[in-house]
Image (cartoon, rainbow, N blue to C red; front, side):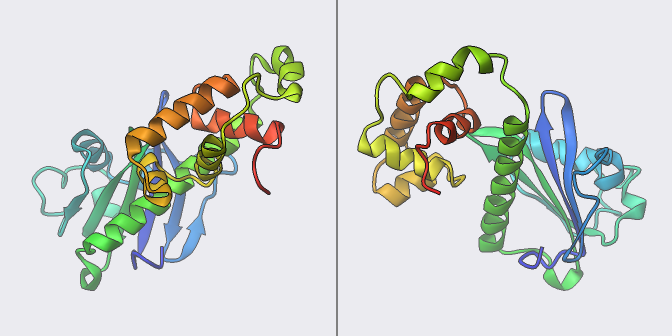
Length: 220
């Protein structure tokens, strides 16, 4: 939260079960971690603003939410610590994944483009590792069936380039970021990623990382 200078913020995940608060901060101090029952979205952020930002899929910045015609009637607004707010949509694997909601002091509003980009990347990494952690805690329905196959390794070995891409995927990088790192196009990275999924018999990045760890394919 230091980067944003926000007086309050929260990270909201979007999933099959709807919106869920993953993290909350007051200033630089975390509040109400994921232990126990998560706080309802309505108590952590204005739901109307969050849903709007998810729908338009672009950063939404409001100088005074208490006076804004679209959002001022949201029940949360009366308890906001600052009227200047920012809502950043987060995407993972080119799919909507959640929202970073921030309440900013007037002196720090609006954040510049570089701040918005950096905050979006950091929030995406947090959501990525949260998903990975959850996936690792939940047993796979095919876990017992695939145990012997996992120990034996993929039937078709990864190429050197696929191995490089897998390492970068495990760091939470997007296809675009991996492409820039390797000096190739995002389309090429997507091809390598699909090949990795096929060889590891998975269909998601988090599953690929879990499988790769079982096979000891990732650098420690």
